[in-house]
Image 1 (cartoon, rainbow, N blue to C red):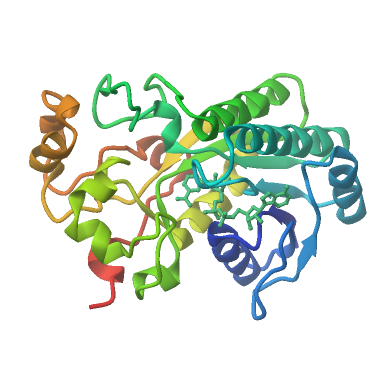
Image 2: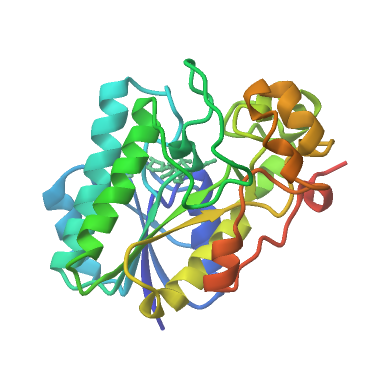
Length: 294
Ligand SMILES: NC(=O)c1ccc[n+]([C@@H]2O[C@H](COP(=O)([O-])OP(=O)(O)OC[C@H]3O[C@@H](n4cnc5c(N)ncnc54)[C@H](O)[C@@H]3O)[C@@H](O)[C@H]2O)c1
């Protein structure tokens, strides 16, 4: 049985990942600075992983085979820029440093599609659509900068470590209770995001069911030993969180996408997960069309 440590296990994504790992037979250790919810699939150990000593201590105590690093200040502008940058970059460094030093075999770091820079107040246009992992990055706030630094941190350890490392960029995560009407990370319900396109338009109508994210992480853990070290993967639903084709909707909501959006046919999204499909055999199974409660 594989022993997997999940940082940020009490969070929106962490709870689904812990459940999926436990259901797949992993021994799961959850670590978070806040307590878990009663009924979670694994108990949460309280720890502040911005403290390097505490990170070493937790990893040394459990000696996991793999670490899924999800802990972060996950919402842009929810804290001051300085705290967001300092926290997220320290977390990524401490997790990679402790895992590599202690000989943990596999590490996956959560990044974000926001690293490409959409939503910038000074204007942003895609280089092309759909956006893939080779698209230029243009961080413009403390959150997306911290995520790009987290990716680079992972990559820098991957150049010399025996540990196999990767990062993934999950699209806007929707947890099971949010399909049933609970507010999403932005504070809006999924239905509001569909009915008012200017809300989801900011993130180019991207989304991902949290359980699909968990499936991707399990596929990544399986395939990591055979991949080049330090790869990054987008992970998004197979369609856009929109009631109209993005070819028409996207240029209306984000005029700078005109001239690019016509490549998006039918219900297809603005981000492609083709790399994850090719290298991991993963595709998102869930869509708002099947998951949203009436
Ligand atoms: N939710 C999304 O739409 C989305 C999209 C792209 C990327 N991500 C990334 O995925 C990861 C998980 O996101 P989420 O939506 O579950 O966020 P979340 O805020 O629900 O969960 C993050 C968890 O990290 C914990 N944490 C924060 N600081 C910590 C510390 N110092 N030590 C230990 N734990 C700490 C928090 O207490 C929280 O439970 C984050 O890295 C986020 O940046 C999320």
